[in-house]
Length: 421
Ligand code: GDP
Ligand code: IMO
Ligand code: MG
Image (tube, rainbow, N blue to C red; front, side, top):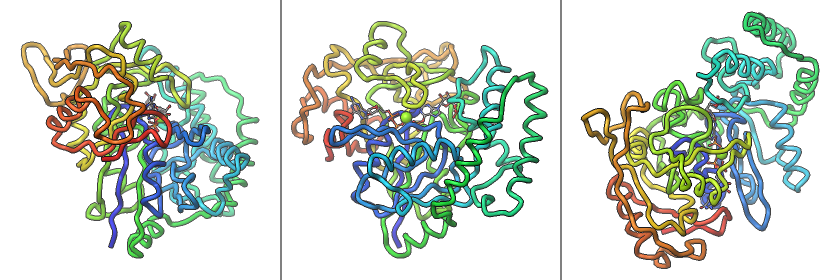
């Protein structure tokens, strides 16, 4: 019986998961998303075209592979419809290729309003969410108040919706949040009808049947390990388990059925939204990383905060996920840098540690190791032998520190700009 391979982010999201899933999909027959929702923005580039996917798995562009939205995902019918219709307009009709778990939870219009209301109530302590209703939807799931995709088929769907809406409206009123639901609601009910043209399935059976039939399955993560609700920089995190364990609960895969774990990281670090970021750069170098790396959110267009690679956090992420292969992205962004810094430890008061602490607040001061820049254009490289020695020294160091091989190096946004060792 085959195992499920997993691709997930090791930092604060936007590592390049979409690109790598697309590159690796030819090796697989099924690609499945296991958590998150339209807070994700996964960018793919090939043949001069660029696509940003939010809820739809990144395996849809590689020749009719089965793609699944798993039970761990939260789905906004309106945004899903927009995404699917846009793809259909560009010639990718997904109704045969894509199926959706009946156990995935629905993001209701009032969940989005609640997201905004909770953020406003937090004031300067706000999380800086994507405003897609993620937190309130997962809250309802865990408090056993949620609505699931399978509920679309219930005769009393509208009544269940009305009860949820009434509950949400009571909270919105208590938070003094002004809103107008009419248009949002009309759009949502239309989108709910649109959802019915897709196969709504028991995805845990689909995935396990594929494994039994010896089909290769790839699980695609959203967000990143440092945004995981248990292990991330709480409370500045998302509301799902972004780590490898999320594949078990988000797709119904037993732990002993997990195969390779591909951990993706950028050669530097970025973060969107609020929360601590020990290696953040507030100077010209940070601005250069943002400018050259086009570090602006794929979903919200917000500026991404930029900083040096943080090996304390990376080693933590490797440990929590059981990463078996590393994938390094966006090294090309630092092509012209004279010096490249990597945090190898944190100084906290008079203590130095290479363990990721309970809290990474202002008291954490990174301890850096400096590397000479490679000062050449990595985007032209297509084999590992093409890379300059200075770059290989950087990769060797990361491998030594993490104890995991770097198997893929991405040198540009395009599908073809990828070096596989
Ligand atoms: P995801 O959310 O993990 O899928 O990542 P995003 O799509 O949000 O952000 C990654 C961004 O980097 C996208 O704009 C990609 O097109 C781009 N990208 C991916 N790999 C590379 C790379 O190796 N070099 C450069 N310069 N850009 C890349
Ligand atoms: P992908 O899959 C980067 C961040 C938000 C915010 C926090 C909580 O493209 O890597 P939420 O809306 O989830 O309640 O927001 O998490 N965040 C992401 N940051 N990439 C993402 O997804 C993100 N999804 C959520 O900015 O700080
Ligand atoms: Mg993204």
